[in-house]
Length: 72
Image (cartoon, rainbow, N blue to C red):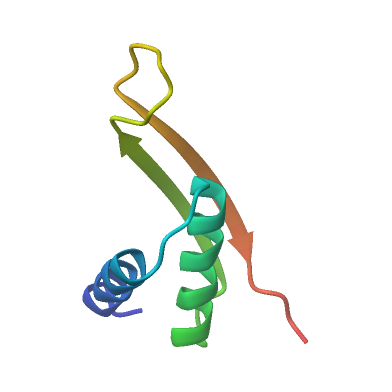
């Protein structure tokens, strides 16, 4: 895929939406990528949020997801 186009899509999505959970943000990004790139079969995505309001001395809060396109 065009990695530049994918980066711009992710940037536009994250700036244009709000989510309370990193999990929902990650799934939304995956859905956008699958919609924009029909040949994309799998997405492995890690999101790190620095300064997360957790109340513990952490560098960041983060999640990783791995999604495979459902074939119909």
